[in-house]
Amino acid sequence: MKRRTWIACRALVVACLVVAFAAQPALGEGCFTIVVGKDASADGYVIMAHNEDDAPPQIVNHHKIPRKKHAPTETVKLINGGELDQVAETWAYIWSEMPGMTFSDSYINEWGVCITSDACPSREDRPEVVDGGISYMLRRLVAQRAKTAREGVLLAGELVERFGYDASGRTYAICDPEEGWLFCAVNGQHWLAQRVPDDEVAVVANSFTVNRVDLADKDHFLASTDIIEYAVSRGWYDPADDEPFDFAAVYASPGAASDSSNFCRQWSGLRHIAADPIPLSRELPFSITPQRKLDVAAVKEILRDHYEGTGLYQSSSATGCPHENSLHTICTWTTQTSFVVQLRRNMPLDIGIVYWVCLTSPCASCYIPFHFGMVEFPTAYSSAAERPSGNYYQEKVELPFMATPREAFWIFSNFHYKVDRAYGSTIARVTVEVEEVERRALTLQKPLEDAAQRLYPTDKTAALEMLANHSRGLYLSAVEAMDKVLSEK
Image (cartoon, rainbow, N blue to C red; front, side, top):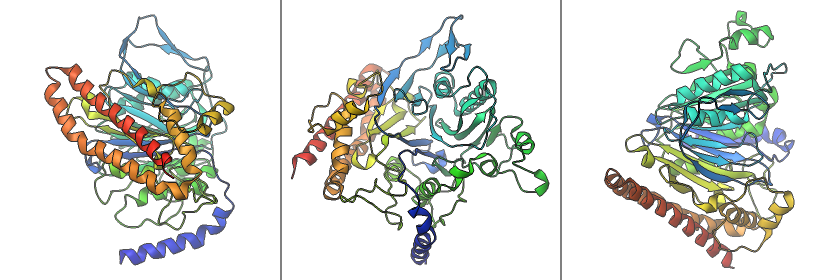
């Protein structure tokens, strides 16, 4: 019965949306985020994942920033001119940096608090900002100062109310091992956050997803104090209609909410998770209970999605590359980095926090695991201090492929560029090689972590170096696999 229902749903999707999709241009950017509640996770702790999409030329660097103590007189300067007092001590964190980009960095700190974001345009056209507002530094301040996701949400809210958010709108995923939150910032001084239920999974695709709101439920909802009153004053919401307050309906930009490239990606992410088919529409749930608990492999599968098996899979490319789809895909040619973060608290966090990261489109790249306790990222993962020029980027990706692992971003980008141009004849072989590297990583993860935990109490340095060596070995295996694919006719 379920199969017949699914086939009927596919037919309805194609019939109803073909006209709308035909008018859609191929889009260049569109991030995607997944938050897995702790009881929906195979780990028993929250998992957060993200595709960061930005049109080239770009570069992605990775850094491990240590804890730092600060003098009482120190201040933090915001990029638009604002200023606030520095705290006595800031936490250690992993930083995924995209130089020159205001909204593209992601962070994971030593307590397992992590933050990333999706652009979600709002309808606000009269924003109030102070000293130029805040945007770029918001996520770094959360990483530097918060010990829990809830603390991070409250800090972000305080900063938005104090300075005003200086962009149209954005959803920040702020997570720790126990809780996952979606924090919605609106241009100006308004915000609202909802906690993902522990036994559910939420996905975000460039439009606000928080719908029915119960502000009396402080365990699951936090917001600026006048979030409803302000909407009433602007004529966006009328409580007299007896309709419950729906944040997304009230605050989202109508264009973003109705963009099929947004709600179709959200739907396609949910379809991987749902026990029963979910009809494709603009009205999608904030989160759902998954048919089975999600692990790293299941989350990576979602991040690699191109609408396979839905009737929406298309390509205008002669090579059959799904990234050239009139409808924006979850995995796309503008994905500069993709990651999955395991946030496990049943072992030392140095070992329990694992950052699985790939560079460029995940369908043609490998997720390499890095444990938080590593002293620093391999030097190959930090290549430049500035965003490259268009000419330099094109030169690097068009060079003949060389299996020299000194610059991770460029070797993955070069490989991705070549795969996309021979996708139909290459991707099957790429998938075999990628799956082999990732299978080895997942198979060895538990025995290596068990060994590291036994050694950690007596020789922490040796335990963490063992894990770091494993990551370096997997990276070299990925480079070897890419070379193998491109060396074959």
